[in-house]
Image 1: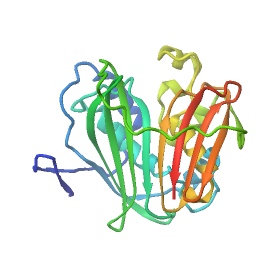
Image 2 (image 1 turned 120 degrees about the horizontal axis):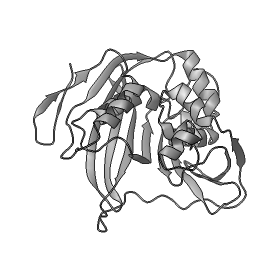
Image 3 (image 1 turned 135 degrees about the vertical axis):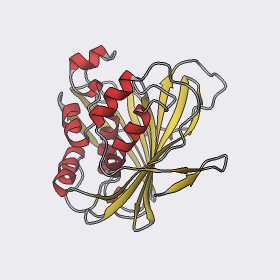
Length: 293
């Protein structure tokens, strides 16, 4: 069993899980235990060892996000290996922020080397960095992926809980300026894209599944999953995203389904900036992504 040291220096045992927790179960538990949460972050870490990649599942994901079908894992694919642990952590009653209503606002990923479907991975997830935000509170869910004791991939997903305004709080890292000009691609997104991504990712958040369930959560229609838009954008940047690289994605306005988006890019040596904008309202930005390689 792996231990880790907290900021206070105490050693806290990690909780090792033999199987991936049920995402449906975590969503239900998070909703049922949402009231009355407060306080500091849990210091627990959740771990799964020897996680293998299912090639059929990988191919389904690659097709859905527009990545080449093969043995190389797309830049954001390991997110699917860690998200069931992150969802369990957020749904447990000792997590200080209620799970319903959390908004994924940023995602930072470091891929240390190309990853292959033949490998098996140890996946560890924990929460850190609970802090005020101009629009509420932020918390980071960190996923660490190791192969044979080597760190090969790490992600920090920042979630916002809207609430009391903190005008003096720092909003976070500033996104690069959005590229402008002629779009390099235009994508028509089907109304069932959220259900397609749920089928691959297991993330059955109702805001992505159907207009009726999305309306119950305050959206006019179902919205595309942010991790799909991020993965689709990074895949469009080509092979550079599959090798050693670092990405930072800022999620802006949701993409309503069905809908059309345009990809605009600014490609420089070792650095690419991309953005998704509304196809008929180019002033509306859905996402900005920075890829450094």
